[in-house]
Length: 339
Image (tube, rainbow, N blue to C red; front, side, top):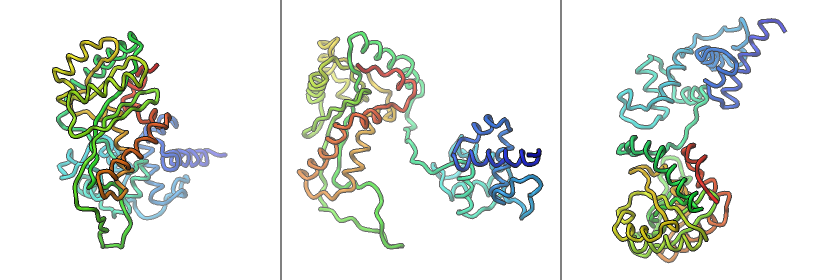
C-alpha cells in the first residue's frame, strides 16, 4: 500500500469512527493523532462527495457550502452553549435554530434536511435534555457533593445504615404523556371523563436495588412523613439514612424532634434546593408516569389501580431499580454505600 492509499485509508477510518460508530470528534482526533480541525475537514469532504471524496487527489465536485472551520465552529457552538448565547429566542437546539445560527453567524445557508445530515456527520443526535432550575446555587451543590453527601456516607457506614433517596409525586387524571399517530394536518383528540382528580405517593430507592413506596391520603404532612420513615426502617430491616428534598414538612419541628430520638436508626440529609436531578428517585416517577400517562382513566379508583400496577413491577425488578438509583453524578455513584 503506497502513501496515498494509506492516507486515504486513514481518512476513511477517521470518518467511519465519527459517523458510523458515533465516537466524539475530540476522542477520534486524539486516537488517530490528527488535529481536530483536520477531522472536521475530512467530515466536510465526505459530506460533500461521499467516501470517494476522501481518496487522495480525488476532490472534484461542486464547491463546498460549509468548510471544516464552519463545522468545527458549529460543533463547539452546539456542544458548549445554547441558542441564548447568540441572542436567539430559544433555549433548545432545533434544526431551524441551527439553520438560523449558521446563516446569521457564518453566512452559510443550508436546507433543513442538510442540517439534519450535517448533525449526523458531526456525531450529534437529538436528545431529551435534563432541565435545571436557574435558581440553583452552584455553591450549595458543590457543598453537597464535597461535604454533605460524603458525611452522609460516613454516617451510614458508622451505623451500618442503608442510604435511601426519598421523593413524593402526584399523578393527575388529565396528564397524558407521549405521542399518538393521526392524519397529517389533523391534531388527534384524546377524550377523557372531563373530571380532574389526583393520586399521591411517596417512595424511596437504594443503590442495592430496594424500592419502597406508600400511598398518601389527601395532602402530605409531617405526621405522614414520619410514619413513612418508620415503615421504611421496618421494611429495610436495618438503620436507614434518608436523603430528601427541602419540602417544608421535611424540616418541620415534629420531624426534627423525631429524628433526635432516632440517632443510629433513622437519619436524614437534604439535597440542595431546586436540584431534582440529584435525586435518583425522580426516575421512579418518570417511569411510572410514562406508563400511566398512556392509559385512559375514568375514575380515581381506576387511577389508583393503574398507578399501583405501574409501581409494583418496578419494585420487583431489582436490576431496574439499581439502574434507576444509579445517580447521575459519578462522584456519588462511586461513593453510595449499600449493605
